[in-house]
Length: 190
Image 1 (cartoon, rainbow, N blue to C red):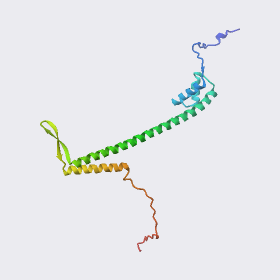
Image 2 (image 1 turned 90 degrees about the horizontal axis):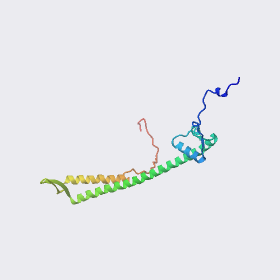
Image 3 (image 1 turned 180 degrees about the horizontal axis):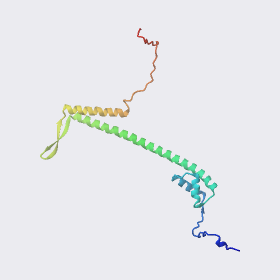
Image 4 (image 1 turned 30 degrees about the vertical axis):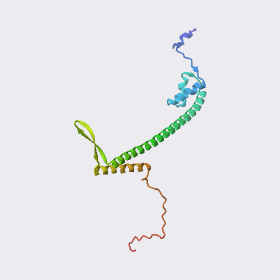
């Protein structure tokens, strides 16, 4: 009663082409692979090992030690790059802010100078259509126009002063001393 061994196994053997040999991974490759996985948002220690061992030949202890080193390095690198970017953005914003404030002041001062020149000349340019053509006519400035230009100039000066902080309240230390005790008569008989 000898049975054939081949008839015992009912499941067919896999073909040689379906078996894939796992390739080993160097420390540098492992480190780079881990960093790439961290950048993609995969930071689970065990999950990364399970994912890696599907295609590479690696011992669990070696993978976990490399993970510990790589995660610390990645976190430090990420914090450093974040702080450097925040610092660079802050410096750029300060430069832009200072530049725009100076430009605004210059623009307002140019407007004031133009208004003052118009007031000094006391002549207003007006446009009239003569013979189908637009022509410039100089007119003497009336009182209403002068008042309007002076008010505009005053408003522009106020804006410059606000930009310089001239209207900010002055902080000072005040001390209150009482020479006599204050007696309050709540009955109203005093």
